[in-house]
Image (cartoon, rainbow, N blue to C red; front, side, top):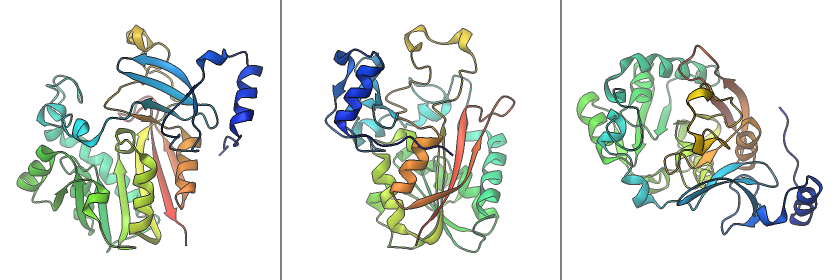
Amino acid sequence: MSRIGSMDKTNCTQANTCSDRSETSIIQVEDPCEVCREYLVEPVLVLHPYTVVKCLRCGFIYVIPRPGLPDLESIYEESYFTGQGPYGYKPGENYLYDDTRLGIFVERIATIERYRKPPGFMVDVGCANGFSLRAARDRGWECIGIDISEFAVNFARERYGLNVIRGTLRQVALGDASVDVLTMWDFIEHVPSPREECMEANRIVKPGGILALSTPDADAPNPSPESCDPAKAAFWQADPPEHLQYFNASTISRLLADTGFHVVNLIFFGKGDRREGAMEVYAVKGG
């Protein structure tokens, strides 16, 4: 897998000039790139009040400004999961009761078990209504879920009897090296700081333990360009404030390596799969 090389700010500016970009298109952001810590970016798309930008050093695409936790909590209410709100699933697409999705999570847990088998302790961050927890529990894992959505936490507890905690991974404050497997399915693109999430994952996952995640692939082609919103022509995946981070194989691998994980399996999904345009990443903690 190729990785984009680093360059200092001076070299970034030189490279920008050489490629005939206007220097006025380069801006310096307040918070550095989550992947390579660069401050210089190029705007890709403006969707007021947000701007989608691309890091000039590593190519990582992300949204500025970054919403705070209270703003994010307000997104993930019941309407998000039932297709009745401004964000989330489409009208008529009720995620909560769509058990046809359970098979995806059974596949994911089976993939994890190529590298770490039960019994063991598994944590699912951004667990929503608990599909992954149900799949893991049925295969012999001791597991807990974590989610910032009060609605989703209560739903998972009451309907399926799952052990779910409301909050962030950092707020829950699990013990050092206490987790065998940590999963982040369709999660890392939603958070203000993926680096902080991965650093906390490194703290709590045992050496040799597994971090598994899924996220949209920023390099994936538009599956339906004919219906693309013209306002998003420059970057069809843009979806703030729901999705704040846009990884490809290179940037997710670099972030995981920088936070102590080695990617052992990276799976892409194309036409014919309901996960089209997404990637799943399975990584082992070093040490």
